[in-house]
Figure 1 (spheres, one colour):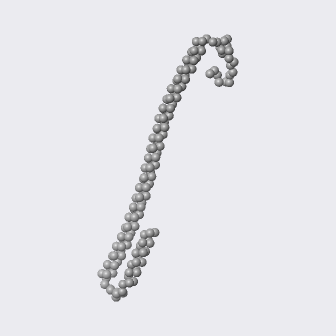
Figure 2 (spheres, rainbow, N blue to C red; figure 1 turned 30 degrees about the vertical axis):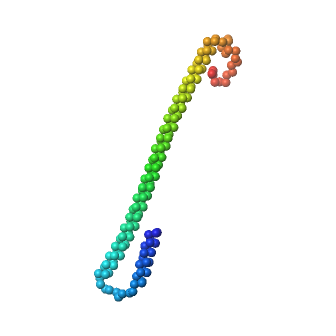
Figure 3 (tube, helix red, strand yellow; figure 1 turned 180 degrees about the vertical axis):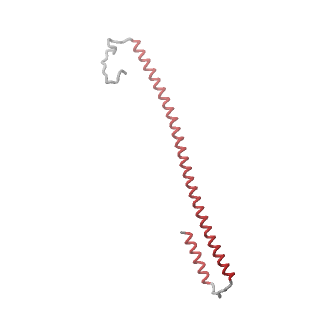
Length: 140
């Protein structure tokens, strides 16, 4: 739209300048007519080439914008992958620590069971005089 306005402004300025020039008698030679047609055709061709180049550059800029957005999305996906991989490695460390804690607790329970067995404190039912209540979980 701006190009059309600019073209119309140039056309209006040309018309005003031509109106200010005193009228000369019309010449009937074909050379001047041909020259004017070639100049007008050259100006129109130049205008069309400029407009075509503008559209081509706009299209290239749009393609570059799309490519940049695609690369950014790719970089975001790559970054998300690395963050997930880092989180997974952290979970492995936490799981390793939990396994160590579980192994320690198992050793403590095994040692306490061995101590209780060594004390030989059993009654006839093997409960140590305690009342046994079962909730369906089995023996703990």
